[in-house]
Amino acid sequence: MHRRKLFQLGLSALGAGLLPVADANARQQDDIIGALLEGKPLPAPVVPAAPQIIAPAPLVEPKWVNLRNVHTGEKLEAVYWEKGEYVPDAVQALNKVLRDYRNDEVHPMDKGLYDILNQIHVKTGAKTPFQVISGYRSPTTNKMLAARSGEVAKHSLHMDGQAMDVFLEDVDLKHLQAAALDVGKGGVGYYPVSKFVHVDVGRVRKWSGT
Image (cartoon, rainbow, N blue to C red; front, side, top):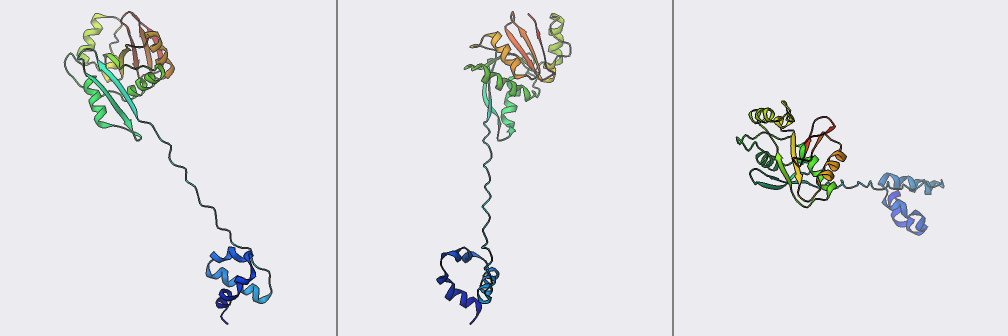
């Protein structure tokens, strides 16, 4: 009788101990049958490998920013970062709101500023938008402001779209400064008389003005 036919007809009577081989391939079955016919010990049953479990990718929350240009009254609340990348339309809209209002010049703002504002908003628990006193400044505007005040840097990071002057209506200015410092990124300037906090993406530093 053919060895595989013998296996099909006779091995079911040997009990549950051989059930693990039922799912083996044909070659493994032949090895078992041969061992039975020759009176040799049965080979160990093949234990299938455990299925590999792939952990789902962690969910990454979108990042948003809420701000208002105090000079133009324009407001924008937008998700600027989603699915691991910045959202082009939101970034472009933010550039426009943060333009130099004196001459309507638009300049790309450093997207790291939005990350700083996002973290400050979370740390302070603010419910109101950032009030922006100054975003981008054209060279002409910065030169004019520097001539008026010794506190305006001649090579201000505002000219590169890398700085903003802001305040929050529902957060004490000192608390806002502390939150900005706690973020640990860029420069933080505290201006209690002018009532704003300067944030930028330059080197980490802090100072006080008027």
